[in-house]
Image 1 (cartoon, helix red, strand yellow):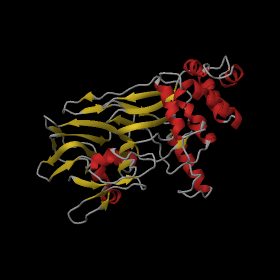
Image 2 (cartoon, rainbow, N blue to C red):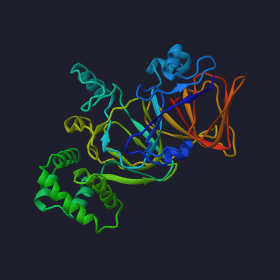
Image 3 (cartoon, rainbow, N blue to C red):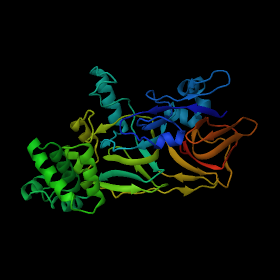
Image 4 (cartoon, rainbow, N blue to C red):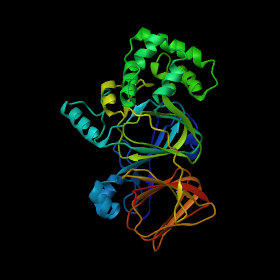
Length: 392
């Protein structure tokens, strides 16, 4: 059965004052950051049922977990394994990385044993799951993703960094992993006077440059004056996704979303280890244990056409797969026994119906839960939507 969802909006300070308001036709003036769709306890969705309106989605699934999730998903994960979001970044998010599954399980258990409350300021692990994620641009979407090469970092920093400090940050002869590790940890642990002098020199140099990374250094300085991490665009790859383009963030990759409206899909977790540009808790030693100190080339994901007329964003994730549905001029048929999914309307009107069952029309920002193993469903416009599912 198709079930309409009621979802929580997170009003984090970095949120936008227009993206979600326009999507949902809201008059709210303050920053709105994320609309969560899923079963995470910090943002549980509810579903409308004929006999029990606004039932928590986790409670619904618990009534018949194998029936709602499908046999394979139930046996592999035991619950809905992904969290789906509209993400509206009006200002930069913190520089961060996410732990892998083993690190999350060990860190969560250790903090529980230590008696650290889940809502404590100094809590690193909110759950025991990893958090690989994909973000797809709805508008132009600026982000930082992964370390630049040592050579590229040296090219930037040599323009304003004194030779003796440059040698201390980037000693000759190091391999890539050790060199990036040494650079980042040394930079973040410099004494305050050294950080101030380096930041002053870097800002002065960036003011004379016509370069995206330098422009973001100056913007970050306006938001986080005096934070050495405002130099991050000079050591992290800085790019702008165009609408329809996506990035995949595996565990351990340092990144930050800077500005824009996007669709985000991740494993069902809220674990974040921060590395700058934030008033929140930062545990650099714990962050270092999770980081991949590798200079990966940035891979922009573009959707691949599927036989049913949808377009699929392929990643290595076992928990989730993002699908784009353009129903402006076509009907898309989801086959029988389609995996457990959440459908979120982006523009126009999206009507979904199933053989012998109910029909539901969604407008922008509205969503519905689609249990596994149901009859064939038809999705019609005119409109566009994103769909989250478990990979087949």
